[in-house]
Image (tube, rainbow, N blue to C red; front, side, top):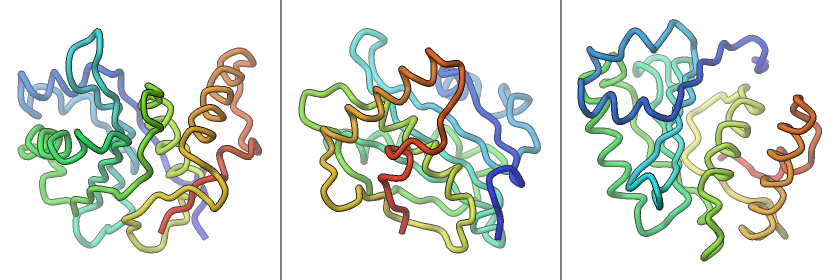
Length: 180
């Protein structure tokens, strides 16, 4: 079984997608390392009222197909267009041939502005469940957990993690989503 500590993760500052958009992948490829999983925060729209989504590039999952390019977006109205934009930005990257997955995932609660915590939750759930044997296509909340409850609990978790300078991997919210 493969555990998170056996994989290597790379993260990015949130400005990486505009760089890719302006300069092409060649201009930013030095930011991508030989890590097996890259967690890329994707921000779409105006800086005052934009939207966060998650891009996960996993070179171990679907390895025979060049890895996986997984897009997770919690806003129903923007999911398809944001996915198309993200694919376009990575079309000249070394991940261009990776298996592309638009992840079926829960939608954030209406009016909650929870897109950032859903993005962080997607990253956390992917990393915790790094023993992924086959490429999942769905994130789903466990029975009895609403999108509003999940958003509230993830906000609490993120706040406590920052306040304590540590992430509690045993927090129930980090085990409230299923990958399938």
